[in-house]
Length: 234
Image 1 (cartoon, rainbow, N blue to C red):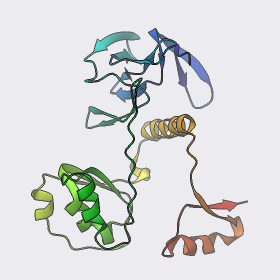
Image 2: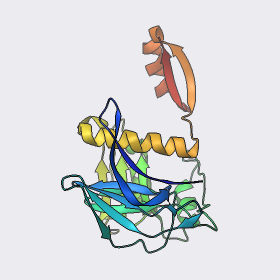
Image 3: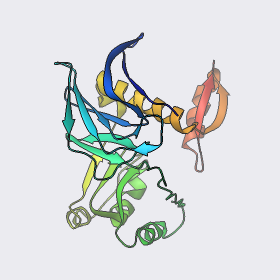
């Protein structure tokens, strides 16, 4: 597949050409730190040759610069920014891609021990927690040293032993969409849409209900065993 040098900008209404890179790339990752867009890795030219190159494009000066290269050449990965640091996740080279895919039932007794066992006893680096009032203490048992728990859902109170956080130098963070700035939301939406288009992933729809049944939809989503999105149809 032939890549492109073009970098386009979306202003909420239409696309315009922002700049062009100095090399043709396919499936690089991108991230933004302050006023600089980072173009990370990818596959070069029309072949399937991965690159470790990282370049920065300054949105103010409209100039490019070379940045420290990735430890390993790869493309098709994701990049996220946390506290000014860029984390590059996954991807692959011209020989192989990451193939780890484990599924655990969080309603089964002892699932947290299974998770730790699958990581060779190290624990996981990140837990995105949707029901903290039930699971937070278990999360702290299965995260790795300096791991993070991001709470995105909660329905009550919970008592935890703070030593579980201290003993691993762990971080527990809360996250809600309504605290995000418009710029952060636009960045997140763009990354989600790009990832879905690239992977072919589609959200799981559990039920479709008439808009007039909105009160019942709230009841349905709170029931045990609910899965997927409940879509209200006008």
